[in-house]
Image 1 (cartoon, rainbow, N blue to C red):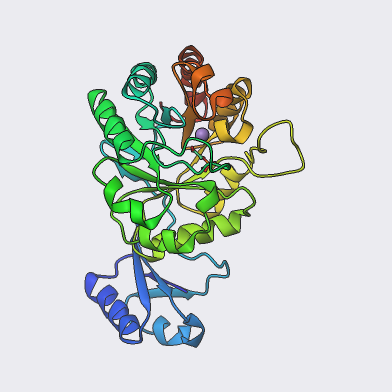
Image 2 (cartoon, rainbow, N blue to C red):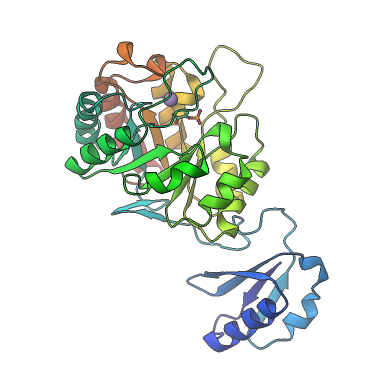
Length: 337
Ligand code: PEP
Ligand code: MN
């Protein structure tokens, strides 16, 4: 249920309503918009009689939200959410590009890749230290030693960092090094991990599960937000379909659909979506044209030697060319890069 306050409702009437709801055991989330304050009430709201609240001072209307996701929905917050990461805004005017290797392998690898992607305009450096590998015999990542490399290299280029967290025990050790905690496709419905990340003061990049509907994905974001972490960035990374030519099928339509249903920013990952380097560039262009708030792209200074996801990693020169192309497309959709 959401309670929309009057345009000129003062703090006191908002506090009154919040107090009454808290007294009855409900969690109240506040969205302070440019126009008015909206209160998102979560819990067993079936027991509440909307009329009681409609009569309270400063209340404009009480609306039952039919969608199962509440805090991530547009009804709760009309303005787009802008997630601030250091001096970068995801979901604002700028299309934000995150790039780097699939996996952190060595200082030299991260440094050589970062030097290129940063000069081309990527603002956030990616690199996995804990890797969700399909086979237990594949390289599993460098752990904290890798994160130290990621942080140091990112700092030397004034970049922010994003890296995947696979389990609750890793969170604390990652915080000194990682600006955005990535939840991978395989963990999108790891509800205990999501609940814990909901209590952490750090933006989360929530990838879409490979067989998840948009509704399930938004409900996953609800786990983060209902815990108090509103800094959620969604990432479309392809879903499983009957097509086997590409690694997954990139659901570009998810971008405008999410923008309609939710205020959260959505970026796209054409690397994991296609698994094929030569398909990454056209799809990256398409996602930006469709309104993506950013891109996550795998780049490796020597993809043929990559320990993970080499076939989908761009050569630095390809990434530079892609950024040049994006600089032409982005103004056409009213954004900057
Ligand atoms: C990744 O970004 O390295 C990754 C493993 O992605 P996904 O969870 O989308 O497969
Ligand atoms: Mn990868």
